[in-house]
Image (tube, rainbow, N blue to C red; front, side, top):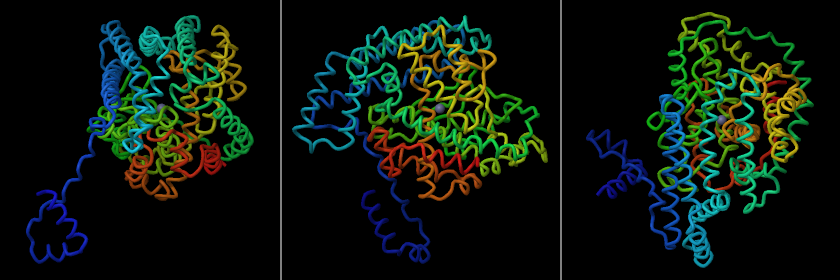
Length: 551
Ligand SMILES: [Zn+2]
């Protein structure tokens, strides 16, 4: 019945008779039919029994992973400190179980059978099923030679690092931090070595990078970074000259209520069209972390700094960009399946940095924000809160030793330094004991300033303490992808400014949903960038963005 009413509705619309009819007969017509929910492809019967079994096995691995995400978020936001030791045991056990499922003795046989079926009966396999099988195989290959005890230890040490980093940073003492870092480096050397048995990576570091960015190569990353560094260095003197001509920004001197800040940030996430039915904003005393699942995308950000409300805004819209990506994944059709997941850290960071760096540091954004913060903090007419001053504060190019406070121009050099140091560490060219000196020298050479303490030096980032080696390059690659996507999006939907100024950012989210998020892992990162923008990933759009804004 609904189907026929739906057809009737469509026919009436097509023949443009609806309006005159409604005028003549003001009776209630049946509501337009709701679009049918896409069918859950992971439950769908497939002609290949081995693939059916694989889908069930990966669904269960996905469920375990979702449980891990929930436990992890609880660890950062709500868990009482007395539960620390037992929670470490729970998380380590969970990740070991996931690894056992992924490397189960039947897995290779099932993958071989499914591959053979796909070869003989290509018509039974559409592009999503084929991509799903490919991702299953990739995951298996990356993990099959890693011992379960290494994965168990990796999970345990990650949360030890999450818990201890804040205290180690507060103390600022290298000797206290060194043992944990040594443990992490030694563990990840073992993991990379095991992975290299089945993957084609020529270096341990490339293997680690691929855990975060499937398909990325060291060679391509180095070329992009070298070219961007060369071009950025060429324009740096002009940017600095330009900066000298500008009136220096007034620093914020108010005392900004924490509850009001949280309210403001929730509002901004509403403007970005983050779905609060499936997520929320939560503060942590630890470091923020991206992640979550499409059904439960709880954003975790730093507790508000009452002296500077811009910090929390940066953190919220950054994590909001990650969250919108996760919420936009094809959850109804491919929930838990490998093809339904995000494309890895570089694309993840592109979504976060598009909001954090490109939208969230635009004049339009501060024009929208300024009257709202004046009202919220009861500080009308304060010159510190004008759109122009807020813009100057967030676009002030300065050589600072701390990455998270860095401006959009010098940010790249912070990432480039970490990338080079990580590579040297895993190539065996740098010992952990020599890290502090190597860090200070590298930051001096690339960023142009020498940190005068370890707090502003190599203890500042949580990444290495939680075992995230090979993640840093994703920030610079993500920034490049963000700029490339922004150019294309502007061509398609016009400049961002009108959406930002009106507080109606849905068209931006809809474009990203359609072009990036809903594709899951149907294509590789390179294929997706090419198909959306018509060009390979390049540093040039980012360079154009920097030139347009800072020259
Ligand atoms: Zn991020």
